[in-house]
Amino acid sequence: MSFRSARLRAGLKVTDVMKVMQVSDAAVYMWETGLTRPRIANLLKLATLYGCTVDALLTGDDTEEDTPQSAETPPVTAAERSKAL
Image (cartoon, rainbow, N blue to C red; front, side):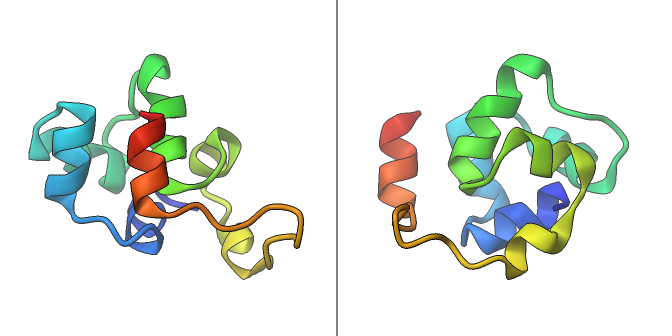
């Protein structure tokens, strides 16, 4: 999935990502438009924040959105994601 679709799917605003990741709005914009990619150190943090995998972010594969979560893995709330960071 794209960085933008992952953020929107997680119910986050650009300002939320800026605060958690400690980056500028320009950095988030560049990730979402494909001008740049986040540093490797930030990818896992972003994937956790967005509730997806690093692979999904890097491949731009949106099919994960249509895949129901398994009964074994409950959905992660925004509060739980922020605690993990």
